[in-house]
Length: 399
Image (cartoon, rainbow, N blue to C red; front, side, top):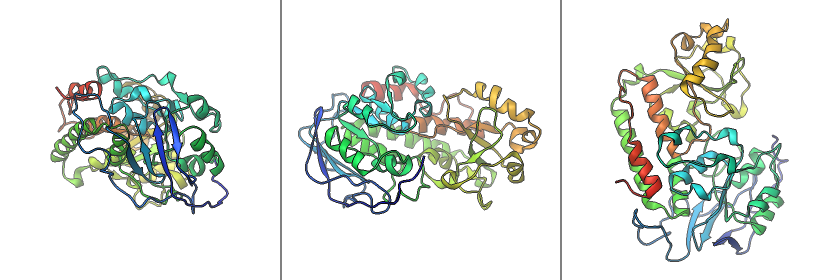
């Protein structure tokens, strides 16, 4: 993946209207590159103009008329009806749509191996047809799948296609926006990219924008209540800060020989659950940078830091704890240098969780790490009610 050549583009005002299965664009071009790149809407934060009253959680969601959603970097997108087909890129946004009861609208994923779905197995009636999603990454991102999907909306930060992946240029974005459907979205999973020079959103800020887009305020509020109650419960029972371990969050293979650091202190949606638990960054004050600008670490370098715990991610399908212990951890315990790491000796080597973390992922991650890091305190089988959560997702209400 390479960065664009630094070309700059105009920054006109954009307004687009999504009409059922098609799109009506009202003038202007979508800018989307680093530097002088994206249209900066005057509106930031929550757009409260979507509807005058909240829909009942037990009734199908309908809109009384056109509504709009404003989100950086695109700006304002107007809708006449809720999009029936949506093309996301990263799995955090897919998880949001599943949570809001719109999993059937999802058309795409940028890479299937980056979408962790084991948590759906614990939620009755909640699933997604991963094989049925169009994979957008195939040694690059072609425009052809966008025409084939013909989605009502692309739930994608357009700058990511140019500046992160180096896959498209401005004319490609304009072509798909004008001929297929508008873009809406913001890259939220990390905050280490120089090109992302516009507003970031927390996980729940982005989730709220998606809820506005599919008109699911009641479902969003119900899931946020479960989240807030879980956070309050867990944080009230955490040990004092000096008794909490630090962690080295890294990418690693199934038989790891090198590790790519991914800083917990770097913020981003996929680290919010660690921060909820007060897990500190083992790489703090070591000179080790985050993923976007770092080199890999070997065992010898890692041993010099000797973190309290290790959190290992990998670009493959999700593993259960048992599968992880029988493969990754077993390899490290047999490694001449790896076996000397304090975290390995103390069985504090854990799965690092998904790279693209949506709201449902987040609930399960808070619970998982609370129980793994503080097993003497969190002895319950579950820290939140799966049945209530599943009912909100599938029926739109908590019975």
